[in-house]
Length: 260
Image (cartoon, rainbow, N blue to C red; front, side, top):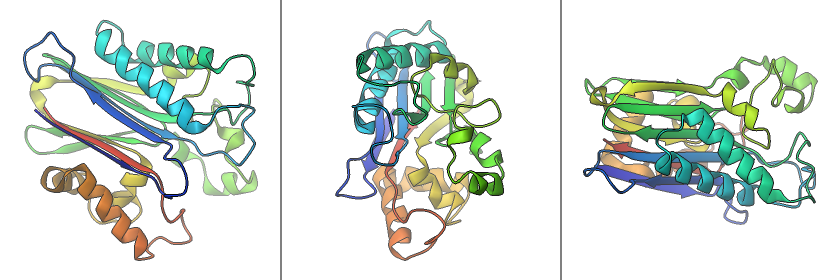
């Protein structure tokens, strides 16, 4: 088994709000089981969260709970793992935070868990999961609800807040455990999966912003150059000025790649 992880801040002067981890629990044969988690913290405007805690504080606690629960509680569905992790993190805030605030610290989520029989997945919001089959084909598992909101509608409201964690909008992990029921979930027979890759949108821009290749090409870069190699490619493109004016020039980036 090969597992590689890399992450980098979009701005070296600001904390990295992405979070990534992987674990291979004890008790099974080598490579039989494992889990990975990737989170992309949602950056709020300054002083507009209703919370005394930072986004990195939130992603560290939510991510830590997710990697522990997904690895140690194999009997729990991933939706229940996410709901329990959100509950734990909300309880850690304490009484000084307004967890009902639309900008309370929150994050996108990707969780993958594999065992002898299945590769399970959960995706919430616009981070991405890639599943490479044993035949070499690559399937992207995406939660595209944010992309389905018309751009003119977002411009009309100036921010995405009116659509955030709303029935006709998109969903992120914040303080409400019920959001776990909105995640994109599924399972693939283990024998059909050769590799998995989870990444935040600071990495997926190699495909969806810069158009350097498709998802299969993305996995090929990961196999050949590793997780840091893919992030380095994104940074080179950003420094070349491509995409300027459409998205922020640099974004926090995190990717976990695992060959099963």
